[in-house]
Image 1 (tube, rainbow, N blue to C red):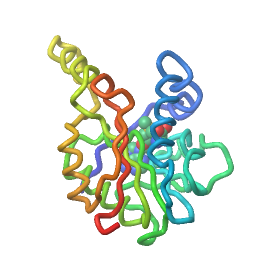
Image 2: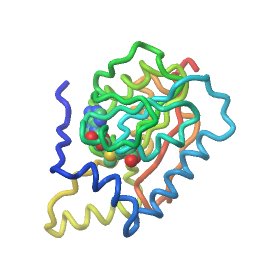
Image 3: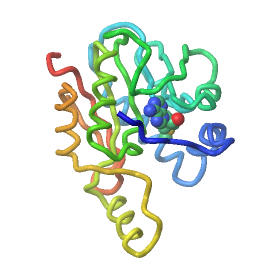
Image 4: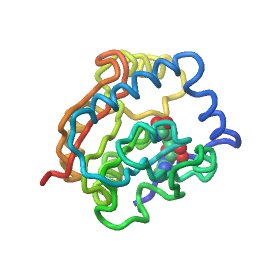
Length: 206
Ligand SMILES: C[S@@+](CC[C@H](N)C(=O)[O-])C[C@H]1O[C@@H](n2cnc3c(N)ncnc32)[C@H](O)[C@@H]1O
């Protein structure tokens, strides 16, 4: 399957690391995302071992994982922008260079809203499930909220279409099932207001 391109201009990785979550609404978003991730993982008895953070971006959330993180991103500049202290690799989530069940768990945060097609999202979820023997936390953009409505209105009023893809919660749960994953808990950052939503899931047999 052909990957959706996700190219960035020079300097993007350092700006993402140093500015994206430190200005305007960024700090609030960062706080809410960390809280949602902690709430999802709290109280679970997860297998011991390394956790995959893919895509890791500049490694913002790696320290929130309950095991030592292995950071993976397709963009070498992002991998290079991660602070030292974790193992890292440059690779695509479409073909992760790890054996089945390598990781105790995995995080896939802020990727799927850049992937417009159902089949590609399901392929990515399957690949993440393949390398993980424990839980997967994955984020998606939920279409049922004011932020998404505003995006659509802006496009209808002639602004360039948004590069973000949102789907309904039911649709995303069906995509998880198609990838062999079973949702345990869902946390929206601000339900019906903001798109960002995190799901904790496990392999359908788990
Ligand atoms: C918005 S950043 C999110 C980073 C991090 N998870 C966070 O929440 O801060 C999205 C990242 O996905 C990476 N990416 C896009 N497509 C990818 C792919 N197919 N495989 C691995 N990484 C990819 C980009 O290089 C970028 O660093």
